[in-house]
Length: 402
Image 1 (spheres, rainbow, N blue to C red):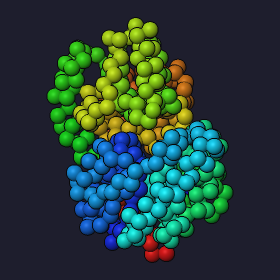
Image 2 (tube, rainbow, N blue to C red):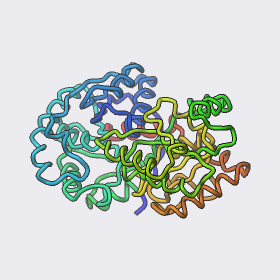
Image 3 (cartoon, rainbow, N blue to C red):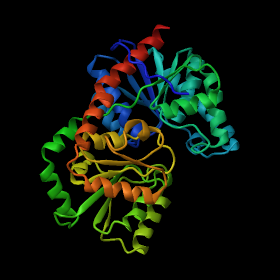
Image 4 (cartoon, helix red, strand yellow):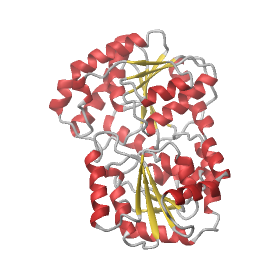
């Protein structure tokens, strides 16, 4: 079942209490930062309630966004996507307590807005306690491929616990999985993530300078072909497949930008071991977490998306389109909605390294076919941040108005 994307009128003055679980800058946090700071410009007096302090809090406060930290109890912080029902039962009391604190910090606001999964559970309990409506910004595909059975049972239960719930899905893929899971009348709107293109425009204007800098940093000559993989290091994100593909691309170098964020350090070390075992140390470059992603994209001849499971959205795919960097992506979930194969990028079946290598070869051989320009136009029309924030604000107004 495909969910129709609704475009509504612009902003409102409803006060939103956003809720997020982490201090680390993942895709969900980048998206919320863009929404919060633009609503602040529109004189919307919102608040972001976080479960831990750190980089995300500092980034929000640097733009003047009101933030509050309600510490996540240890019993709840141990819950993961594949956690058992026992772990969930152990965490429930801690999450009830957290829900009370969230409700207390949102007492002067009009709507709760959960940006992540644990934020959704605490937000549902806060909604039940306070009677406030809850918007859940769903950024995950809630299928058995991504979540344990007990996790999915909890999501269904929280949809009933919340006093009044409305879901924003960041792609049709996430919306379809949510409808399949809840099997009840939960309103769902698809609003694709918006991306701020300003930094990518600035980086593009200095493209040659950025290319020289990175190639000097990595001791590459000017003729080397550079493939970039961007995002957190995680097994399902598939960076190991990029390393495997490189064995069939002897003229290319691979730049891996990102780090392990959520207890996935073992996977990061496995990538480094594989590179050493395959003798690829001179062609695979681990850059870790970086703040200059727009500049790094300008240094790459191609951006590669490698997820082996369906990607809920694919923020880095759109960022590469704004960067005018050709994209090869796995044909599942969000990227399949973003890219038109052969027109704005190239798609291959997830996990199929042979198809990936072929698509990379085609992309690198077609420097002047206009795909990057068409991709830029498509990204601007469909994923501009201002348009998406207006859609979110309009939905907030609608939910509060009900």
